Structure formats: C-alpha cells, structure tokens
Image (cartoon, rainbow, N blue to C red; front, side, top):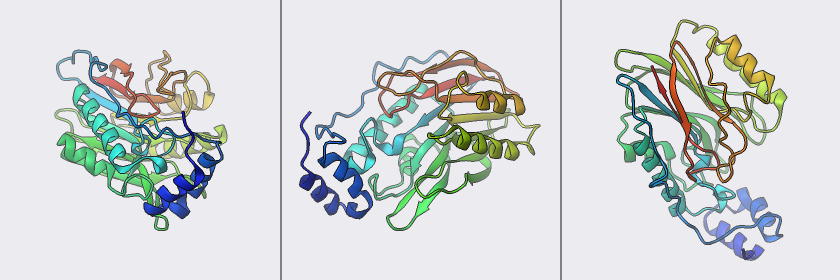
Length: 297
C-alpha cells in the first residue's frame, strides 16, 4: 500500500472545507502513523446474505453501527462523498435483503462536514421507502459542522420518541433513542443504543442511566438493540443490566467486530415480553461492525 504525501492529504481536505477540523488525521497519514489506500472498492453484499424463513406473524429487527457511512475505511473524513453514498447504498441492499421491519442504527450522521455533508438517515429512508424514522443527535456542533447519534427506521408508525445523549465529553458523546413502534397487533418499544468504547466505568454509568429511563416502562414489550462495545460474557455490567431490566438474551456469543475478522461480540439485541426465534450476523463489509438480525414473536 502506497503512502500518500502529507501535502496531498492536506490539499484534499482544504478543498473540501475540512482542513482545520481534520488536519490531525491528515498529519497522522502523512507521517505514516496511519495509511490510507486511495483505491476504493465498493462493499459487496450480493450472495452473502442468507436470511432464514420468517415465521408467520414474526417481527424482524436489524441492528447496525453504520460507522458514519465510511464502510471499512479508516476514517470518514478521508472518504469521498461518492464513496460514502456507495457505502450507504450497500446498507440499503442489505436491509432489503433481510426484509427487516425495524432497523436500529448507530453512528448515524445528519449533514456533517466529515461524512459527505448530507443526512444519512434521510438518504437511507428515501432509498428504502420506509415511511417512519427518528434520529437522535448526541453530538450537534456548528463549527465544524458535526451532527450524529443513533436512530430508527421503521415500516410501522412511531408513536412516541425520545433522544437521550449521555454525559457530554469534549470528543465524543454516545447515547440512545427510544421509539414506541405501532406494529400490527403487537406494539413494542425500541431502544437503539451506543455505549462508550474506551472505559468500563463509562459503560457502567451509561447503562445505569438507560436503566433509570426504562424503570418507568416496565410493562412494555421492549427491544434494546445496538453497539454496546462490550460482550455479554466479558463484563458483568452487561449481565447486570439484562437482569435488572428483566430482559432476555441469547447466551451464545455472536462475534460482530471487527467485520474483517469478527472476534468480539459487541452488538446485541435484548428483549422483554417477546421471544427471540432466530438470530444471526451477516458477513458483509458495510461497516467495521457486522449487522445482527433477529426474528421476534
């Protein structure tokens, strides 16, 4: 892989009005700390998504960290706008292939300087023809323009929605969104959540806040899905969260990260008042995480 010169990277970023916001990434690239392959290959999913037959009346839920639309590239600030669109198009094909009724999304951008300058949820919803969506921004900055968080796409109406960023920090804020889904004959609440990737103490505090929110909603059918950045078998905090909120989980590990060679189970779907009839991850490189699909009854 050939290194790109520092001046070349800085020139590219300056022309895209990203220079001052993302010069550190350019510097790292130019110094060889990070390497960037300028030859882009769009992700492929055809022939790699084998979906189980759906039971009559089953609900199908998909969760995916969309990685700001960068696919498996190092960083979205170094990814061209047209390549981000191609990555999102691959996610569209994935969702169509799975026939998901509801999709929980993380690292989901509104119009942001570092990821093409357009709303990714709007792009996905229009491409798929899903009539209902909700986007909670956990980061919303003006200079540079950065806006991203978690979201929901749905075939069914969303009756109640809430956005809950976790405690702000200078670099990155995680959070969750809540949506009450009016599915035919079976309403349920969906939470799309993204936890901190660095520290166990941060994840513990974030799960505590999520539990406090759910404490007033104990009678609801509930689906909690997303990127927890920890495995059920690795950290007691996740098991404690599941027990505290009377959630059901599939105990067997399902590696989802990194998508190039999955080793850790970071992406989960937990339920209450519903049963998980099937669960699988798909070996597709639309993100650095694998998507997880569940059928619920």
